[in-house]
Amino acid sequence: MLIKEIKVKNIITKSNLPKSDYCANPYVGCSHACKYCYASFMKMFTNHTENWGEFIDIKNWEKIDSPKKYNGKTIFIGSVTDPYNPFEEKYNKTRELLKQLQGTTAKITLQTKSDLILRDLDLIKSFPNIRVGFSINTLDENFKNDMDKAVSIEKRLRAMKKFYDSNIETVCFISPIFPEITDVKAIINKVKDQCDLIWIENLNLRGDYKIKILNFIKYKYPELFPLYNDIYNLSNTIYWENLEADIKNFAREQNLKYVINEDNIKKSLHSSPTIVNFFYHEQIKKTACKKSNSKNTYKE
Ligand code: SF4
Image (cartoon, rainbow, N blue to C red):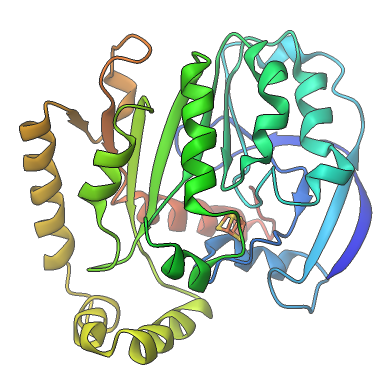
């Protein structure tokens, strides 16, 4: 693992992600090394030649002078790294960022695959408008271990419950959904009493990880390869359309709200969770990427 400290001017930058005005990523790279990581394309914008997951740059930045300037805005922490990757334990950069943001009323989302976030529970609680999201795309620890080096699903679920029980808004991000491997309904059943929002996003394959994932499926789940070939090489969208309809029905049966735009949700904390469909998020991300690439820069 190559570890380097770097200086950046601003830790908070304008975001091209939908629904986020700003992003903050206290690290470049991510040691969780998820095989499906769309952020791995970030490598193009760094001088790293190592594989994704084998380098991490620890950012040092100029102190945020006025956190109140973000009032009324949205800040997403962890769009291209996990802010609670194992290096956070030593370098405390996410903790430092949160301390510098104290006083803002911005809507902050922290997205992680780690229970290290529990360390900052008291600090996180001190923000008036904050939520924590845990990425969980399987309940099968073996599949999880094939896909990432982050903490177990069990630990993520326990951490989510502790935040929920501490009256903090929690999100279960079921992403990416692997066709016929991710059991979306089983995950919803597992988390519905300990989260406020359930985001669902399908697996999109592009860049050099497409071939890696398809080879993995061919080797580990050969019976599913024709389906993956259909979806990812022949661009057949029927599987997703059927899955969407199925989840929508399931939500109705379970008395859960189901929306494609969370802006319109009016709900009180810890009422039954709302499922938010992000199946078409990838198109938006691609557009955002194209826009920033055309300026020869990448916006997180
Ligand atoms: S945790 Fe997120 S940023 Fe880190 S490797 Fe996995 S998908 Fe990429």
